[in-house]
Figure 1 (cartoon, rainbow, N blue to C red):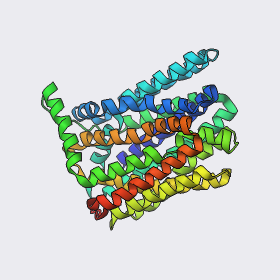
Figure 2: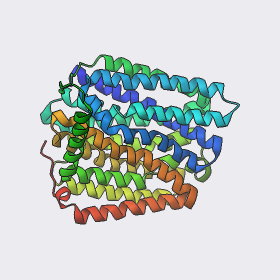
Figure 3: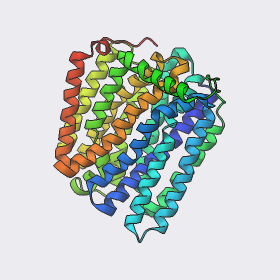
Figure 4: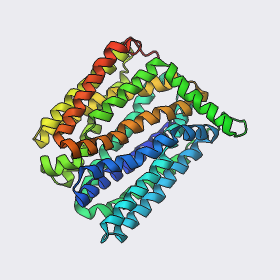
Length: 402
């Protein structure tokens, strides 16, 4: 592993720790403040909307920019917004209505700037790794994210308990600072688009990214399968409710619940980094998404904290297969000159499945009740996997070559 890859993994790890701490702290804080499931859903919606609406123009802009600069702008903005959020949480303690609005505005602005993040990250990473080892390096990058996603929630849960939600944000600021320093150690990756900016050209380039994904059926089905699985099958947004009202644990127990899925995913990705699934890749993708749906149903019915931890661990392991395969397909099937645009199209689906999935979870829990909403989501995941198995032959027969 060369030095550039190490610095990239450092950036990915510390950014992930910080952002996972952020969502862990804010989710617990907002549910404690409001006591309503919809507040958790709105947190996801405010971050998802700008990411979705700006994904295509952001991808086009990233392709025109030097990639290290684009990443530095994203993480530097996160750093400033998180610091301002820390100050607001201390200043507006006595006015919960204003504080809630400030939280939503800050998360919305993070969504705006974050719309550039995935495209810049993938384009830079793809430029510094060997082309013949993309599957292995994709797993390593995903594993850096997953390890950060383990550390972030656990650390966030303990900090909530021992220092309070407000002071915990200082640690988030610190980790973002380390991530920013790591980015500055990376090489410059200049833009491959040298023509002058024009509205017509920008629309054409964004259209090309959409058409490429639409025409590549393997990529389209892989992204769609992940979209519906997490959109309906996700239960992470509701963990503050499960922790406080169903499993009856405090903030450190809540932090462990949030970390269980990334832990399962990280262990699985360590295995996949050494043993990538090259044969019958599409079939295994569908099987593990189906297992994810089944595990979601089991989690909804569990009333034991430790059983719930184990089920979430399994859900993370099953989801990891989808993440690694989809990430490898994205890098293997995309030409270098279209990488940021295609990644931005992919990010629309990812934002939809994660943040819009959080909104769906919060809304469904408000309407149906927490347990019934998760049972509904798991059932929908299984339904879509069944449809994909029968309709998506091109994905079912896909085997990885890189």
